[in-house]
Image 1: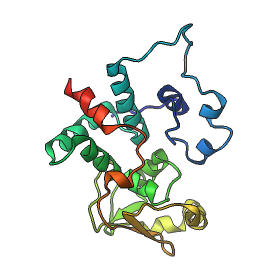
Image 2: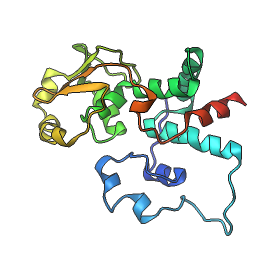
Image 3: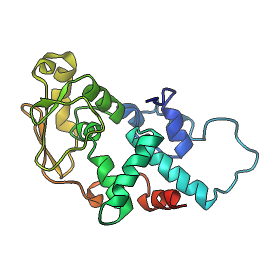
Length: 208
């Protein structure tokens, strides 16, 4: 499947807020939102007011950009959330948060979701002691996320260990800092997730 390969900072500028796509760079003065906060491209002489449909599209795109998902895959995930009991927008947020690449990012093994996706795709991460190289796989309550034994000898792993202490781990996850083994204590709730988009707007977008 094709993936967005241009400068990801343009996505933040297009969305109008930081989506934390470049890890620590997003907190530095080099961040594109700090240097050039305007949307990319030629600026109109007069700013247009977004329609309701435009606002819904923006929220949907922010969710896609944040988690690095293409439209077809995102639409399938929305369909799965729609079939579940409960509020569709909240179900979608929980499904996005349960993705393996996001869990690797939340545990502090990577500075950004794209970096976490690369770790998973390259086979460095194990789920329940089995190598898993599918970033979109969903974790379950009680799952353990660890490093492959050969990956613990890499320079990257040696850099992660001392930096892990400064990372904030969400309450639905736990981490053994000595051997960098994470555990899913429970499924995340919408209150556990600091979403940068509105799930209800996404539901309204797909409902038309």
